[in-house]
Length: 453
Figure: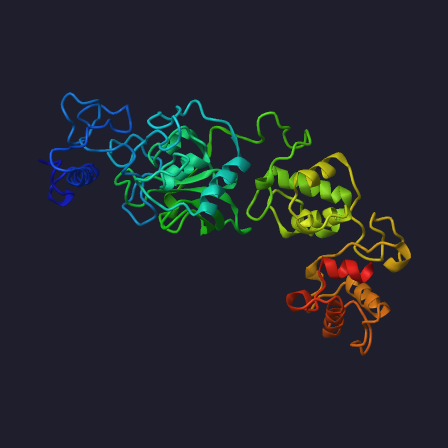
């Protein structure tokens, strides 16, 4: 009787989920029609003994609960809950949630997941790429449905998918697949887990750490499955609620590079697009930055290079790409296989000097670009803004005057950006037939190329 009563009347705390399971089973039986009942299914954790769960059926498999479908009651999204030890026993005896095989994937249904001792190797870049597929698809949150890849559409199913586990885990079992790490040791692809063993449906949640969002380490990029759908967003560390109860874990199967690829510093294998970009923090970013500095990009860094992706990395990468004559998506500041190969093997042209009219190869010795036959390297859009001062601004102004677009200068041009510079640039852009944002008076790469071409 204690198992059937509410906790407030002396009932057993672990019976909460079982009562809910019976309600679910009863409702399902009503839908199926009179006389049809759901079969007893083994509880998720095979290590439990018969009788440990309330409502155990005599003669049923160990831990069986009538009407409970494995995986239909899973971890709940974020929310305040009673105090619980996030490092608590994953096998806490609660019927809440469950482990299950992959569903909906050919040949995978019902297949148990691999043991924690045999994790599947995966790179950090691959973890974030897998997580990104659900974010891009806006996979709806559900504790009972499974996406086309076979993983359950709740927060623990999301992490099971991102880590490429062989089955669906829950917040009470995911820790078996990782090793605890400190906040200072966190790297993209690790998970932040809060499991509330007292009542897993209250507060239990898990996210994938995508990198720090600020230097203070108070915010990070979280990949997570929550209502209404999978998302990626800046999140306070460690989460919006129960922040102090989250524990960081690193997947036991994580590798620094794909199988057969060279480790950073020892080879030239491209680590993948997910290794670079906002929010990323890894050793490949450091290696990229050092290579860019060697190839003439030191001026873009006021500090570093370091492992955390920054605007300096993007600008230096874009400058190197443009030095090769690449444009458009080929010069977006994010290193692809070709950019990485050129940097790591010493191929291509170095980044030219920012000012002084140097040639495209960086070997010029001064004067305007007309005498060199090539445009000087574009210094970046941030140079041409109110309040900024740079030799590039004066170089721009002199070239505008030379091309016949200096009528708005009352004096100068000079190194300080002025409204006169903007109006002259706008006149030049309009002479190219551009309108709207393409003729706003702020020189972009194409304006710069045509002006000095």
